[in-house]
Length: 300
Ligand code: ADP
Ligand code: MG
Image 1 (cartoon, protein in one colour):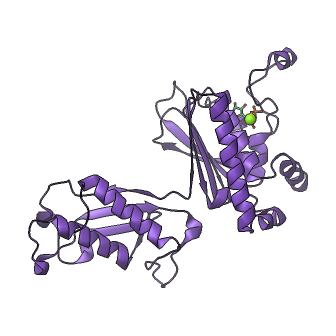
Image 2 (tube, rainbow, N blue to C red; image 1 turned 90 degrees about the vertical axis):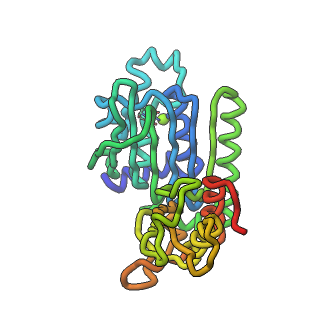
């Protein structure tokens, strides 16, 4: 059965573009007015589609990724008055067979969203409460990881870039046909969140001359990164009224930087805290941009 399922899936889903198209169409079928598409490493590491549609009813969740399950038609006559993109109930099942799928969903009747991990057979293997609003977010990780030849096709950067362009064009096409739809696409975007001292607060009262109060995380792992630390120190020093260099201090600050896993090397030292970033300049720029937007001035 495993072989049969893999063969069938790869016929439905042959590209990153297919996955995005199926997920976006599911979102549109769910009546979404806003869609966010995020890709990491051209979609091979991660494809995420977040919508604000109807969500998936708890009763439908156990079968949502089961082959041939669809909530969109219930009788033969429905086929004649089809108003949805999907009706075969194949896409989710096929995507699950060739990737790792996590679905978070919440309907208007739910008090909170629930995040479900789905296995290759479309079965729910675990679930936990989540903080997302109404709608559905589908995350597809490690696409084609069990189809080495497909994966090999994407080892060519030129092919990846062409595919990204096709994804852009597809989303643009939906935006044109549905002008009321808000739709965004991001690729390898860096996210930063955390705890930062309030603008205008006296950093000295909570700061120290050593780095022990400045915590940096990359993808939720604590790390050391000299240049990020240096940038933070420079920034906060120029923000302090006391410019005496002997008094330069690090603020109490926590920062979690989220970047594609494939662009981070965390195993440089045995304790796994030194980190090497492929896109170091991009990360430094993102950190600086965040600090400037928080506090409204740049380093002098
Ligand atoms: P189909 O679109 O042909 O029904 P899919 O495999 O694409 O089949 O999806 C299976 C079912 O999962 C859908 O019928 C729908 O009930 C549910 N579903 C999938 N994605 C979403 C979404 N973004 N919002 C709400 N329901 C969804
Ligand atoms: Mg569908």
